[in-house]
Length: 335
Image (cartoon, rainbow, N blue to C red; front, side):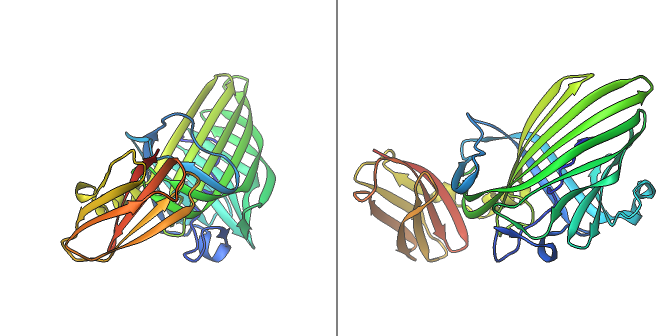
């Protein structure tokens, strides 16, 4: 089983009009939904600060070889669904691993998970969210159930879902996204195994997920898991939505985009090739994600522009240049 705690909101997506409100009509997973993530390695402290007007900077993080993906399907199409009565959707994580969910009015609930090694069945379901949810939202729900398969016993725990932050995120590759909603889900599961031998364990998981209106699934998620009891383990993962990576590959022009000097003091220069004569703009963001400068570049086939910095304080900025439907970003140090 990939995770024996519940990542209850990993399938939620965002309204195209606002990234900061989750509603049942727009955000509850349905059959046919798919998501895919690429793993990243951290560089320094992982940003997960909470509150309004935050800035989360992941730009220095580097991609690794791990990938995760899942597909939502109707529960009745999965044989194991007979052990999860009332389930309406199943999340297929691959290799025979499934999570099961149901809808009760405005409540979206987890019924447990199934894997080749056994089932975690919540006879008292875990409520993931009662719609709607936004910044400041908080819900804690208790659940309980049984463990069957290679091990037999009982489980009990709590899940807390919170809207913990709003702000701007800078992703690997320098892409800046504003109007982000941060959602934190904390799971605590206590296991009491009786067969084939008695043992107890506690599994704790905390997920930080960052939602933007351009994507159905979180653009980035940070997950922590720890097990204590019969074994002591811990893990941390950072994952970027694969659609974002594809977008960075398909919609950038790094090879033709230059800013210099860098570091800069009084001004920096932009030079790029514009073979399609598209309209171009420059946006400069400060370290907390605020837009501090916008410049129109025009649509010449070769664009060269000097940008004054006399009105900016010393510090680190992100220079985002848009050319038609293509975007590229650079980090700029102002001395």
